[in-house]
Length: 437
Image (tube, rainbow, N blue to C red):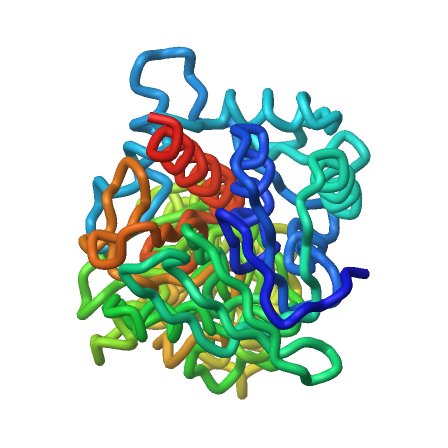
């Protein structure tokens, strides 16, 4: 624990001991900058410990092709109102630099499926332990249980005055010449990420892109979801906005009583969230047999029904469809009251319903799960008010941003943590160049 005084001064104060704040602190201190962190929680990196199913998906190397444009490939994994904004930061600190950085700290990484990279221990706690050691070795003070109440910026030195409330509810004032806001977005609210950085930034003149949940489950309006709950299948999902397919993803789709989850859904969820917030019509379309064309599905079913013409229709799906799907398909086809209807007696109209559903089953998306369940925040501090290569504010000299607090969010699979590492590093390096120029 640290002894609290009424006034404490450091050259650089970082608000937030999450991924971007920790990266910025280590980098800034290695450059010789007097650095301290203010954190509202009772420990650092609380949200990190909850990521990647408790294993911490540090980054993703699937864009590392060994070609000159691998940074461009990485940048396409990010979304922002200014599409090109993440590129200068990722050029400074990409996946190779992330792997090297963690090796330098003593945390070797290992790759699991689809480029997902984790600490070799497969424990998120290792990431926090390594950062704790790194901060201790560099004598970076971390003022825990300090909830920032207000920040004021002036043209005099010290430029920033940060008023906090500590665990005994006393007010403590910190001052600094430079300030980093690394407070995260609105996800991980049970880890204390409450969007407070937005308020601090807005009070200093910064505008916002309204935040919505991303990498999150989708809720749909469909009467039989409870009957489908628990099904997992390899399928292809399409997100449609006002009837037009915007994006498609393949992989394991999870049916739940509220709607859908699974990697393809999480990848598509950002589009759904943004368009729902604008009042657009959003549809999720599921392809249950993605490895076959519609013509091949028709041929397959016709052959199946022809070969087993004597079997009840419900039994004709055994062996290639999940058992829980069949009663719902029967309802959709309007033949659930005819359990003994034989394949040979299927009408062309009923067959047509089966053909369509197996290739394109549409569900009206009504909402996403809340920020509490989301893995990323889409939206945040408007990037046009920041210098893209340094992440310094154009409005308040000496104020920098890193991580998810900005209007930058990554895709599912380690890209949001990668942005935290990249932006924390870029901001600290830019400050170092400014101070020691």
